[in-house]
Image (cartoon, rainbow, N blue to C red):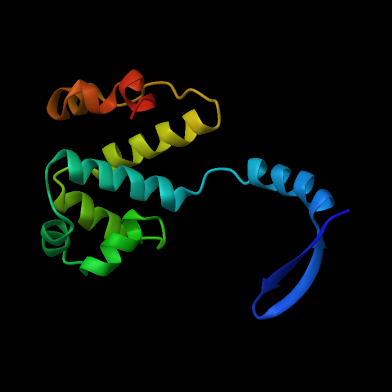
Length: 138
């Protein structure tokens, strides 16, 4: 067995690499999707597709630039009020953003979600924003 030093919070301990290797792989696979990261990825994608800067959106949403950056990177969990403000600044309905997040999570979990977006949303905001085949490859 190979032993290697591992330091956590300033405390060094010796761990068996072979025993930890198999258990560590299972833990990483079963970790699952992190909602704040998916929300951040979708918000960043929407912002970049509009050609907007973080500074521009943070100003319009009345959110600090640093905090918006952390939300986009999945480091902070935004409140529903903050998400609504960001979506308003991006000119996208909160429901449309959350739908994209739900599609990404379903895809990561190997599920399909039936298309339940109202027709008027599809017409007003474009079919491509709501089509399942588009969002799976998003």
